[in-house]
Length: 458
Image 1 (tube, rainbow, N blue to C red):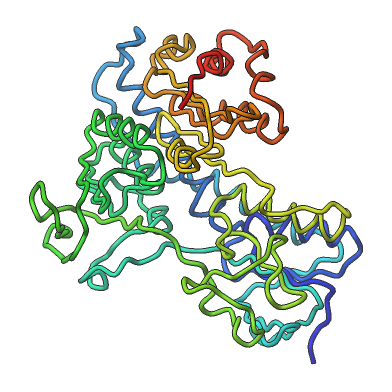
Image 2 (cartoon, one colour; image 1 turned 120 degrees about the vertical axis):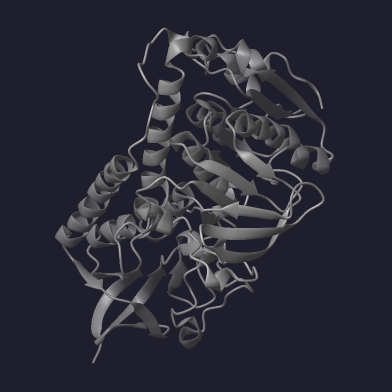
């Protein structure tokens, strides 16, 4: 006989725990199921641990540049990878244990550990326990995709999860994939001291960004000694006595790369293949993502999908916003929709890239009259003071209603400054509100009103 609950939440990524607390505080009897590590990707193998490692890499990079700032360091700068990993584990572990303790302390909430599978539209099995509820929320996340490369099953390839266990310095790290995960790990390990080669089958890095962004990032990485192989498809991998051989199909450069370690950073897959979705009749797309409507409801009444598994966002902030949408609709009489949110994310290389709204290419493709301004980070006094002047700012505005369409900031502080633009976009206010704002000096943000003063027809 099933144990009855008002709501069952499968997975403890960014959406699940907060939703559990809201439902429990509303008086519902809630079951939360986690099969492995509390906190999901962000806490364990994504944002928190990787950005902790990025910070260590940044410290090493600045230390090597000490002479530029008048700081004398006697001897070469070296990196203790075991200490880097220990620091990362400490930061990530605190978040994980804190989240688990909080969930277990919630009134009206019972935590189960084990692999959950749907038995029907209202039943979930966890080991020998059968649970039932009228509301089921799927927050099962995703994992690194394994690309169909010949020989990949016969080598010890790393992914974003197994990279978290690396406590040594790879002699030569080959990375398949020139997008966000690949670039962050690539620059990070180059700064730690590894030789790094990034293999990208497309003609440029991070192909979803504008060409000027890709070109600037390419220049930044190459300046630091990262080898880039563009227009190079990874067609085979094989073991070597000293590591791994990566064969590439390319028009330029050698057809084989001899590396000590291989990192696969070529996309993600949802954790839906062993969830019992077929037993509940929950529809998926061809890639396995759970199909949802604008309020995150699946095709089965009483079942929602939140976070990475629904294909409607691949970030911690989109997952948390999924929670806010569901809670707003169910508990707050506040109609909210996925389509209300504006595309926004960061790439955490150094300097970081902050992105909001449409790219220049998307605006041009729309054919709508628009204005654009762009200026190099060398014009930001704060960037010059810090000795970090790489990158640029760009913003796009609707020429008719004067609302901001999108913007990007590739430069020091860009991951924070982008919110100046994003918040005005959410307000629906004309760009002139931001243009006339008095920002604080000296900051990177103070350049945004100046940037808006230089708009020209696209």
